[in-house]
Each structure stands twice: as structure tokens, then as C-alpha cells.
Amino acid sequence: MKQHQTPKTIHLQKYCKWVGVMAIALLLGAAAPCKMTETAPTKVSENNLPPTTIEIIAINGSPRTNGNTAEMCNHFLEGAISANANVHTTIINLYELDFKGCKSCFACKLKNNSSYGHCIVEDGITKLIEQVSQADGVVFASPIYLGDITGEMRSFLERLLFPYLTYQQEPRSVAPKRMQTAMIYTMNVTEQGYYDQKYDEKLAVMENVIGRIFQQPVSICAFNTYQFDDYSRYYADRFSEPDKASYKTEHWALDCQKAFDAGKAMVETILK
Ligand SMILES: Cc1cc2nc3c(=O)[nH]c(=O)nc-3n(C[C@H](O)[C@H](O)[C@H](O)COP(=O)(O)O)c2cc1C
Image 1 (cartoon, rainbow, N blue to C red):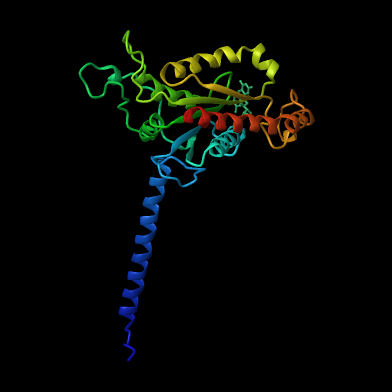
Image 2 (tube, protein in one colour):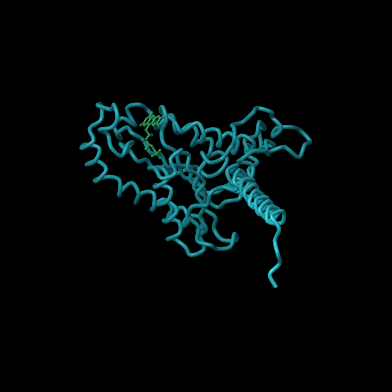
């Protein structure tokens, strides 16, 4: 038998429904910021193999998650996967994480302290530093900003590398693993401009620090990249879109192939 409902019970039911909807909305609202606060790095490409396999990580130091640098990272990881069925790949978009560079606290250099050789700062890259330190191979990829890697990539590398770099005569590094490394750079300048402006010398400084702690990186460059989808919308008369387009047609696929080959070669070296 259908129960009779007074206006009061109907009102109460409506109120309960409203409270329920609000509770769900609040829960969803609470969950969303957790996802945004980035502790779990974004896994873009993954082939669902157990973590005991060969771990290759690409760090994308560009704010554009679908830009030139991200595309090169994806080709590098595809190359790595092509080399062996047991390769597990991850791409991390640094700009999605909330972190700062080294704070110069020197906890990583303290005597008789468990913090020796570790970064004690807790933020959005704390887990990532651990994950990268245990990987078998890492590619650090960055667009060139004002003649160097991006600020985010540099801040990340300060936090990753400085704790492992000792101030002792011996050992010079306390990194848990000397994994294979590579660099990917994408930039607006032509290959000629790259050497004329001594980008190679500038970038070699960080590459050599990486090489002292992990393995010396191989580096892959993509020159004269496209910055905008449509050059006519921007004040940029130093660049000719037709010239950029024809350069892209001739070179971009080759640049991506170089990244693919480097990823494949990295895994082959690991397996030797
Ligand atoms: C802030 C900023 C500074 C840049 N500085 C340089 C530079 O000094 N030299 C250069 O060759 N390209 C420079 N570029 C161009 C980018 O390096 C190039 O377009 C790159 O391929 C962008 O990569 P992405 O698509 O992954 O973001 C700069 C771009 C930006 C946004």
C-alpha cells in the first residue's frame, strides 16, 4: 500500500535528497583538488607491465603537454618499447607538478644524519625523485628558453642531482644507481644558430653534471621548430611561415626518428 505523504515528509525527502546531492558534490570537489595537487605523476604512455621490467622515464620540461618536446618524448619512449617487450615507460609533465628548486638547506650534506644524500623537501616531486633514481633510463627533455633549459627543468634537476653530488674527495656521487640518460632539446633557432650562439657549450654544463652522477647523456636536438599553429596571428615578421613549414616537412619526421632511435639504443645498452 502506498504510504500517504504529508507536505512535511515530502519537504523532508526533498531536503534529504538535496543534502545527498551536496555531499556527493563536496566529495567530488574534495577529490578534484587532490588530483590537481599532482603527487601522482601523469602517466601518458604505459604498456601495463609489472615494475620489475626495464623502467624508462621521460621528463617533459615544456609547459605544452602536446608540443614539440612532448612529441619527441613519445617517439623516444616508442623506440624504447620497440627494443624489448619488457620495457615499461612513463612520461612526466613537469609543469603539472607543484615544486620548487633547491632551497639550500644542506640537509643532504649533513654529517651523521639519515638525510645525507637525500632531499628532505616534501612537495610535488618528492616521489618523482625517488622514482627517477630507481629507473633504468631517463630522458630529460626541454624546449630552449632564453638560451637554456626551462626554469622548471632546471629546478627539477637541482633537486634530483644536488643531493647525490657530494662535497667529499671520494665518493663524488652517492646516487643509488648510475642509469642511462639522454637529453632532448627543441628550439626555434636553426642548427647554425645553435652553434653560433654556443648553445652546445651552455647545455654541456648540465649534461656533464648529469654524467658525473648517472651515465653521460646522449643528446638529440630538434632545430627551427614551429612555435605557433598560425604565424599570421602573431607579430613575428622575423620568421617566414612558408620557410618554417618547408623545414618542418623536411626535418620533423627525421627528428622524431632520431628520438625513436635514441630510445631504442638506450634499452639495447641497458640489456648489454
Ligand atoms: C619563453 C620562451 C623563450 C624561448 N627562448 C628561445 C631561445 O632562446 N632560443 C630558441 O631557439 N628558442 C626559444 N624559444 C622557442 C622554443 O624553444 C621552441 O618553440 C620549442 O620547440 C617549444 O617547445 P614546446 O612545443 O615543447 O613547448 C622560446 C620559447 C619561449 C616560450
